[in-house]
Image (cartoon, rainbow over all chains, first blue to last red):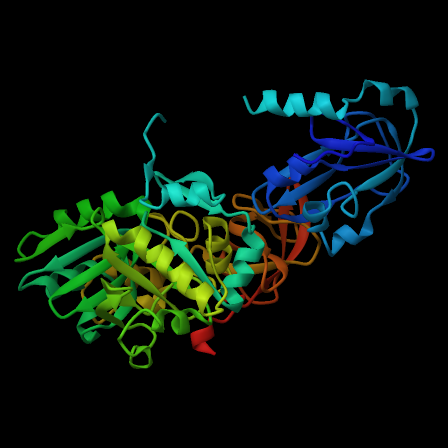
Length: 129
Length: 370
C-alpha cells in the first residue's frame, strides 16, 4: 500500500496533509484500491463548517457508495472541482490530483491525534484480519 | 450460508492474474482484474474481451418429441428455427412470471440451451417436471461443458485465427460445430455485451488451453484482448438494455412488463401464454423504463423512484455509471403512465430526490443492429 510520508491518517481511510494554514484531505491508496473504479464524488460546499468525524461527502465506486469523514474539524475553503468530470483521479493519484477538500482547521490540536502512516498501516492490517 | 462456493477450472488462473474473486450465483468468480472494470468495459467495446462464464448452465434436449416439448416450454416459436439458428427466449410460469431467460441453439441432432447459473437447478427441475407425455431426454451437461465468451469488434478476427471454419458464413444469431484451437467446440455468434462476438461451448477439461490460446493468439496478432470480470460484464449488458435475471426480470415480472414481448410468439401454445394474453387485454401494472440522471449522483438497485409530487412510484432494478454512454443511468419499474420517454421522475439517492428523465432504451445500440 502506498502512503504519503507527509500525511496523517484516519482509520476510516482519509489522509490529511498540512498546506500552510490549511489541511488538504483525500482518501488513501488502500481505500481507492478496495473501492475499485471511482465514478462520482459528492463534495461539500465551500463555507461549510464540519466537526471532526462528521461526513463531508460520499465517494461512489462501481461497487458501492462510501461516506467520507472529516479528519479534523474545520471550515471548507476549497473542493477539488476537477473530480466532477474526472473522478478517476482518485484512483490514479489519491495523494495528489485526487485530493478532495481543503479546510481551515478550527481545532489544530486534532492533528496530533491522527494516525501516522505506520499506525494506519497497522490499522488496515487488523481490519483485514 | 456455509454453502461451499463452486470454482471454475480457471479459478487459479484468475487468482494468479490478480482477479478479485467474489461470490456470484453460488460460484466464486472474478469481478474484475487489475485492469479495472471501466477499462475492461472500454477494451471490450473497442477491441476484444474474454469472459469466463462457466458458471452458466447448459441443458440439451433430444428425442422424437424434442421440438414439440420445447415449444410448449419456451415463449419463442422454435419451429421457426433452422438448423444452427440461435435464439433468445424466456421460460414462463403459468401465471406469466419468468422462470428464466435463455439462449436456444438448434443443432442437427439436439437442442442446446444456455441458462443462467443462478437458475440452473430450478430450470432443470422445471424441464424434467414437464416431460410428461413427451418422448424426450433432458440432460444437464453443465459440469462437462465449459463456456467462454469472446466479445468485441475484433473478436471475430481473432477467433478466425483459431478455427478452419470461415466465420463470414456464420451470421449473427447462428452457430456451428467445429474446432477452435483444435478443440471440438460449439460456437454461437451470440453474446451479452452489445458487441459482435462468440460464445464457446467445449469439453471442460480443455478450459485452460482454450483460454490461454485465445489470449496468446491475440497478443501475437496485435489484437488487444483482455480477461473481463463480472463488473464490466454487467455494465456491458446494461448499456444495450439486456435484462439480467433477478434484476430486470424474475418470477413476479412478465415478459410484457419487461419489454420482452418480442421474444414471445403467441401463435405457439407456450406455458404462460394465456396469462400474458390476459395481461395484454387488462393492461400492465408496471413497465420497465430506462432513465438518466439530470442531477449528479449514482443510481443503484433498490433505490426508490418518485414522481414530481414526491410519491413513490417504483424501484431502480439496475443503476450505474454507464462507461460508453458516459452517463449515470438505470432501469426502473414504474406504472405505465410514467413510462413515456421524456417523463420527469426522481430517484431517491440515499433519501435525497435527484432529478431524472425517462429515456429511450437501449442506451447503446448493439453493434450488429447498426
